[in-house]
Image (tube, rainbow, N blue to C red):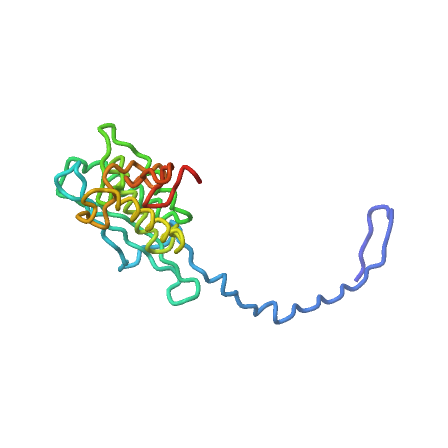
Length: 235
């Protein structure tokens, strides 16, 4: 084949045949995804299953004639595998009292949205428990102080997160439990009619503990000590 050159030649080089590219190893093509790639995480894109496991908590406060019922439903991720997790997916709050209907509906939708977003949702507990009622709080059964009805809902969520393992219990060890039991027995021995008290109740005159918010702090050995969580001003 003849090619006519109309322009001036200013340079040249010798053309070489391209070497055939080496085929890729078959192992690279047929590589299978690892088990970690198959782990399902809770995200906003996760569709709601037809059936969810849940728990309902009864909340009875002196602020309302009727009780609140807090239901938290969980989704099971990676069921039957070593990566199985139970995570909260939605929350419902129901009551015969319609006075707080609007803000309760708004609260359930916001909390459910946070649950579905995934990640660490344990911050909700502290956020809700830090809400204070301007009319004042109340003591629930066992002497624990609740600053508001919203804080009581946060307490129910905390109880649920501990049940499914998202929050760890800060239980006292056996030595600390025995020490508190001895201190409590020593104190009650000095109180009149102590034998008529319910063993679950804390002594009369106990102060509010700043750590666990339970009316269980007493003066022992010249130091304010909580009989519920063990907190002491003396360290």
